[in-house]
Length: 142
Image (tube, rainbow, N blue to C red; front, side):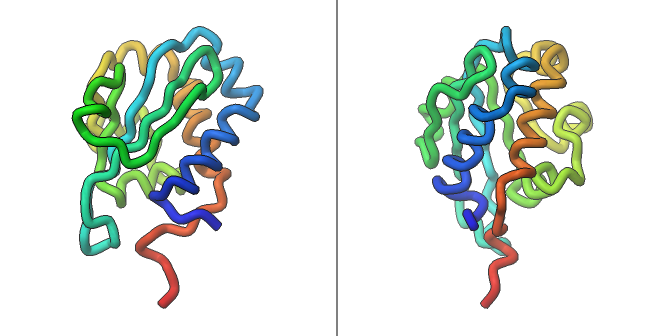
């Protein structure tokens, strides 16, 4: 079972995105890369900020990178950042990501109206994240 956050988790997530007819349809006209920043929470096993990057294009994920340097991630069209525990809430479907952005629980750098226009695609990305069998780094046994 892949640990979150990790390169293995991201790999399974990208596979789920590319196998999803729902995402393909919802994001058919989406163009733009997205960086996710999992902000450090040392007490929860995340000692430093971690960056993951997705090249999302017309309902497909053409490429992804895990652990990229912030200066590279900052070039993304959209950057969504939040503490690790907040991402965990999103993946467990305890927090709606678009509502989270509106409430400032997830910080968005990029065009919010674009995100709102693609709310179905954004929600599908969250639904797909929730389908990845996940072991959270702060819940590991031992």
